[in-house]
Image 1: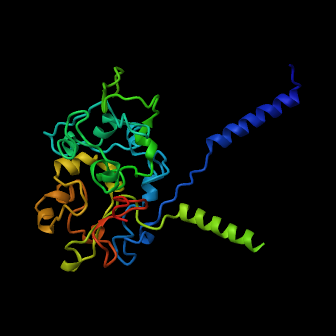
Image 2: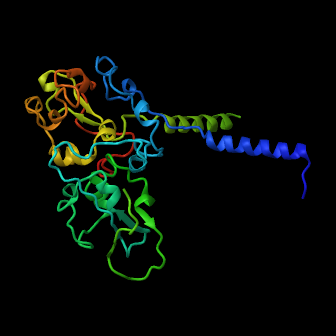
Image 3: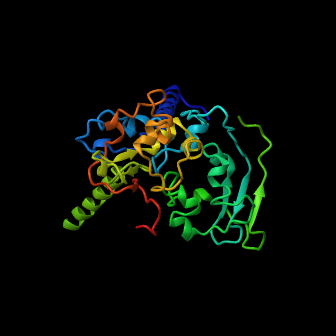
Length: 193
Length: 126
């Protein structure tokens, strides 16, 4: 099919407009100013001097929950560069494997990524309390998590909240058949920084 | 007509509620076990501010802060001596402990604990 010149121009124009609209997606995130957040005292001289959440968070990878920031993504993309240690002698440890949990439950399987967790945390933050270092040995219980125990020590307090079910329960269940209670998935062989 | 208006009002309220959540930034911690008893405002500790600059492991592994709100009762003497907050808040890495108002900026009467715009610590605590 051959298009006449005005039609080609119009089509090209529409394409450019569509691309511009897709690129300029408005950021609908809003952060409450400190003086109105119900915690900071508007009468305190400090409140006016502190950094506003909007000024720090608006440029970081967007999320719909928590601080409205995808913290792991912001870190992986280099949007933030938080220090990993203060003391010179501290060993900064990173672990890359995944653990599959909830293999026999009704909800989708949980893929626990060690990498996303050890980018932020040290092994000792989770092991051996509250979790023992043995695949399948930790009896995770959603009720306890919702009470602020186990994963709920962070998720629901500072890490993404417990309303985000499918971020943990992320692996579709192929069949309802039996199997081990938990599985270990070694790190992908590809090298990551 | 009235029904349509009511529907519109409910929708507007829902949109407003989504756009402007009712309380603090997610992960903010109020420290007030001792502050007001000692005559200063409560401390508002913002997790978001700190995690832009430090990974969790710095405070929760190197500095010894336990990962449970209320489990860390820190005194000004410890901070001035360079422990806990004082590892950074020493005038070298972050502002020194003589800048009282920058940390002690909370409204009077706040209860200690973790706050946030979303559910915190789950329905067991609601």
